[in-house]
Length: 169
Image (cartoon, rainbow, N blue to C red; front, side):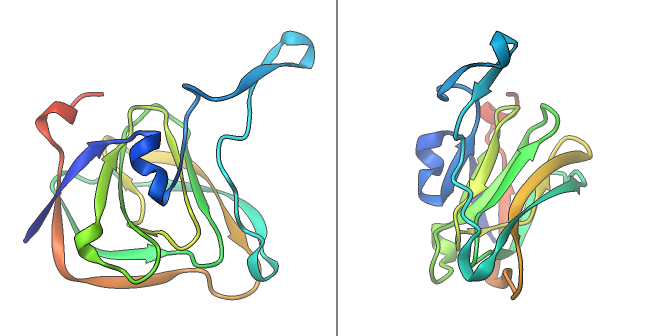
C-alpha cells in the first residue's frame, strides 16, 4: 500500500487546490462603530456555473483514527466547496489537482486549529476527515439543477499517516 504523509496546512502549499480560510494575514478592518472586526474576502466562492446558487450547510464529521485508508476521491465540477470548522479541532485534508485524477499527485494536509479550506471547482478531495472527535463544519457549496459530485475509486489504496512533528498543533 502507498503511504501519504500529511503536511501542515499553509496558504502557499494549498494554493493549487483552492483557498485556506484563516484570519492570520487576512485583510481586516473595524465595522459597526468599532464593535466588530471584519476579516474580508477570505475565499473565492465559485458556484454560479449552470445556474447554480450558494448553499450553506452544516456537516457533522465522525472522528477517524490514523492511519486512514484513502481509496476514493470526489470532485465538484460545477462549483467550489468551503469547509469552516465550528470548533478549534484539527482535521485532515487529502487533495489532487483538477482534471484527470492522478493518484501519484495526491497531497495531504492537517489544519492548525481553526483553519478552513475552500476547494476550487473541479479539485479532487477526500470526503471530510475529522480526527479528534465529532466535528461540525459550516459548508458553503453549490445548489441548483444537475449533478455536481463525481466520485472515483483509486487504483490502489493509500495509507494516510501523520508525521511525528505534526502530532500536536
